[in-house]
Image 1 (cartoon, rainbow, N blue to C red):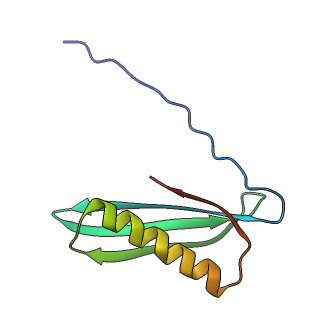
Image 2: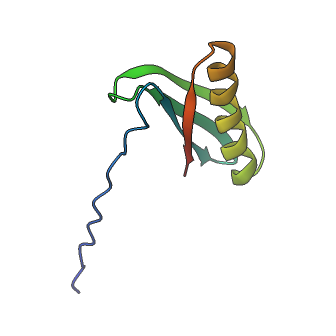
Length: 87
């Protein structure tokens, strides 16, 4: 039996000058969800990261809550957010 290798190159794009970018994601293990994210500058420098336990729920709900957590952080710290990404 042969297995094929499928490689996909992914590039992280910088936000416009003076703006920041928020990337978030979630995962599930035995119906227990967690979410997290990273906030970076226009130079790619990490400003903040987070990892939160989201409890029981659906994958879509966990994705939304992880993104919401990052948005709240950006707003409370008056960050000039330009781009959001969730996968």
